[in-house]
Each structure stands twice: as C-alpha cells, then as structure tokens.
Length: 481
Ligand SMILES: C[S@@+](CC[C@H](N)C(=O)[O-])C[C@H]1O[C@@H](n2cnc3c(N)ncnc32)[C@H](O)[C@@H]1O
Image (cartoon, protein in one colour):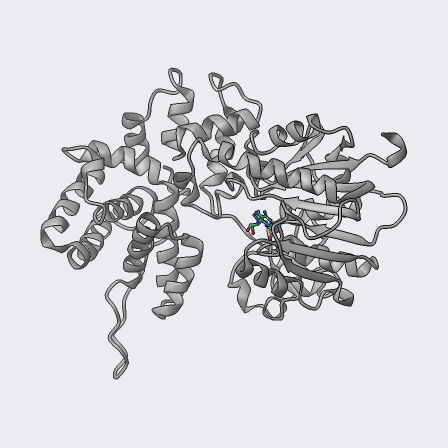
C-alpha cells in the first residue's frame, strides 16, 4: 500500500487525567473497536448503529472517536484480506483461533497494514487490550501473531496469499479487495464483465467499496433548501437538486437536520424517488403510495413533493418500529401530505387500481450499500438473493395491482444483484399483460452512465452513490389491453 493510501491515524497522545473527574479508560478507541467487532460476530450487531451509541455511552469523542471509527470500519471492510494474511501467520488454521481473539488479530492487522501507526505502537497497544479482554496467555499469542504480520507490507502479503490474477481473476480480486468470492462473481455479472476476463470495472467497484463514503444530505422539498445546507457547511451535490455533501462534522449537529427538515440520504436514493415523480401520467395525479417505506428516507422526499403537487402519499411499512421512523421522516411534510400505516403490502389494505404513482423499494441483500454497512459483505451468502426473490416478486406484483391504468410503478433495490433486479422485473412482467417497461434513464437525464438497458443502475465507482437499481413500469391504460 502506498503511503498516500494509508490512513493518517496515529495513536492519540493521552494527556494527564483531569483532577477529580472519572478515571479515563485506557485506550478507549481500541476497546470500543474490539467491542463492536465482537458484537458484530456474536450477536449480528450493525457497526453503523452500535459504534456511535458506544462512543456516546462512553463519552468518547475527538481523536479517540475518529480512531475507533477507523479501526472498526477498516477491520470489518478488510476482514477477507486480513484473514488470508493471518491464516499464514498462525501455526494452525485461523478457524481454530478463539472467537474472542480473532477481532484483536484483525484490529492489529489493520493498524499494521493500513495505517501510519508505528508498528511497535500498533502491536503493544493491541496486546494491552488483549491482556484486559482475553488474559495474559492469549495476549502472548496475539503478540506473536502480530509480530509475524508486521514483518511484511500489505502488498508483500497479498502477493503471497492471493491467487495469481492471470490464473484466477475472481479469487485474486476477492482476497486483494476483501470480498467473498461469490460476491465478486455476482458484481461482475451485474457490470456485464466476464469472470475470466480482466475485470477492470469490477475492480474499480471493489476499490470503491473499501473507501469511506461521503455524507450526503437531503433538503426535504418545501421544508429546507440546499442553499441553507450550504450555509451550514455542506457543498453543492453533483446530481440531485435536493442533495448537498457534508465534507466533515456530525450531520446530527446541523440545525436543519435536528429540526428534521433535512436528513442524511444517499444521492441515488433521492434520485430514484425523484425519477418516479418525473414520469408523465395522464389524468389525475393525486394518489401516491410507498409500499415499503421504513425507515422513511424516500417517503420523506416523496411526502414533500406530493404536498407541493397537491397529491397525497400513503406510506406503508410492515414493522411497527420502522413505521414510527417513517412517521418522523414525513412529519410536517408540505400540507401534511403523507400518512403512515403499519401494513403488510403483500396483503394490502387498499383497493386495487387506485394509485397514480407507486414506489416499491423492496427488502433486498443490500449489496449496493457495502460502503456504509461494512459487515454485510460477510453476513450475506450466495443464497441470500434467491431467498428474497419470492417476496420481491410478490411486492412488485401487488404494486402493479395497486396502480391505476396509465399509472406508474418504480421498483427499487439497494442492490445491483441481477437476481434481485432485472430477474425479478422480467419474471413479473412475463406473468402479466398489463404492464410495460419504461426507459428509466430517460427520467434521470442529469446522471451519466446510469442506463442499463431499460433499467437505471447507479454505482459507487461511477456516481459516488450506493448501487441503487430502478425499473419504471407503466400500467397499461384500460383501452390498450
Ligand atoms: C429497502 S427498505 C425500504 C427503504 C425505504 N424505502 C427508505 O427509503 O427509507 C425495505 C422495507 O420494507 C419493509 N417490508 C418488508 N416486507 C414488507 C411488506 N410485506 N410490507 C410492507 N413493508 C415491508 C421492511 O421492513 C423495510 O423497512
């Protein structure tokens, strides 16, 4: 790894403990990173939720918080690469290493191979944490393994542990860029690349997955303006008229976000919702439906747009806790245009054929959000997409049922996996004669390279967004059937 691509984190210098205050926990950053990695392994915790709550709970901020974040996300993202290297550094198989020790080895490997923390400090600080959490004996083991890791650079290690690119391109990229092999194959297929070829575009995507995503804000239509976000320190966004990028700082500290007039939302999420509202429909355009609304990102945007256009949005969500989040997201939409219901959208509480626009943002593998959910690449399996397909198909079918003749449906996934995107849309269309595919990219004119045939597919390495997929379908007018 070049010096430029290394993380700038160095260990925080600890000052004297403030007189009279509670004792400063020793090395809170590494301890929090360890606790998050353990919780991800043992109780399926989500790092993006647990990390901020532990930082808050333990009063950790500033450099320590930044270090904890770097170590947690770095170790999770790079786990595949580090495990291949660690496997070469233990005498037995890595699988037989205690589950409590493994996160320490990954944390140590990340510091040694991808940060500017001096090697002796990386090893000794990690071994100090090991002594406290797993005892002296296993701390000695941690020390011995990390010393072996420290003998080579990341490039030297990957040259040893990754399959040769010319012989096994997928296996090579899987180890070098830390993704499960099946996922590299699925992503290559979605990018239209031959798994035996040079996989150049796939590699750019995998690299993007290992980078920290920028924070994107949405100014909810009618409640906040992008200019206000820019005054608060954000920068103009590339594509969405409602977006602004926050280069640094905590978005929750912005007044507009605290007042729920703005929120954090990926730019592609904004654009797929916006594209649905741009498709011309003949006749009435007053009844909009969001069938899978939780936690409410797209409903927040659609509620505002509906209010500005004299339409009303019904936002449905099957999980009551998530429906409450939707209620918060649409609160005080323009003209109070949005209503939230707890409902199973496969058994709808509404009549068929009544909505002018329907968004169905189905539950999916989330392979499009790997930058933000670092553990999900290890949690999903090759079977995950196939397991979700029946519910995705059922929801799209019900979306078309709910739409009135001439109305439009937006089918969205936060995954580019072909089994969840094109596969579902084509299977549903094959089973009915009352819907046609529209060219989604025609409604995203400001976004280059987003067309994938009739579909729209965003990519982290092309657009700097999540890999959101959009299909737009028109319900055939009654006289056309
Ligand atoms: C991909 S998320 C939607 C994200 C959301 N549109 C947003 O922009 O914030 C899918 C949501 O669908 C919900 N869901 C899953 N099955 C459902 C069903 N049968 N009916 C209604 N909601 C469902 C899930 O609980 C989850 O909140």
